[in-house]
Amino acid sequence: MECDPMIVAGFGFRTGATLAALQDALSRAGGPIGVTHLATLKAKVGGLAALGQVLGLPVIALEPESLRGIATPTRSDRVVAMFGTGSVAEGAALAAAGPGARLRAPRAVSADGTATAAIAEGLG
Image 1 (cartoon, helix red, strand yellow):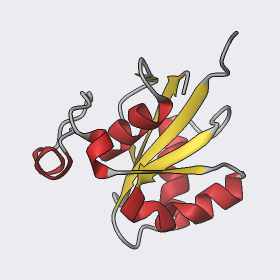
Image 2 (cartoon, one colour; image 1 turned 90 degrees about the vertical axis):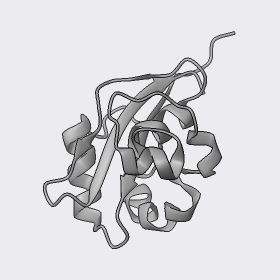
Image 3 (tube, rainbow, N blue to C red; image 1 turned 135 degrees about the vertical axis):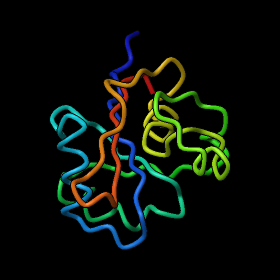
Image 4 (cartoon, rainbow, N blue to C red; image 1 turned 180 degrees about the vertical axis):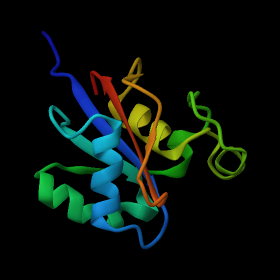
């Protein structure tokens, strides 16, 4: 029995990041075509809800512990100290896409610098 692939766009963003900034980060990460879910930290899920509604996609709320130890191509010392992974966007995408997931590319940053997005593919 085959599982449908999960294609998850993971996000990291500052409080107050706009819908336009989230859309821009997603566009720079490869765009929403084929994406099946959005994901971010549980505490930030409200900031991603509007994008989920616009795209008609469910938003996965991740506990911070689920990102701990996930290896990412991007490494922010501040993010490592806070969450135990190098990038919230990359870590969220990988955690939500499930074991064995792979990033399509390193995270992309919105033009205004308030949001990051990364897309991962996995089997959920």
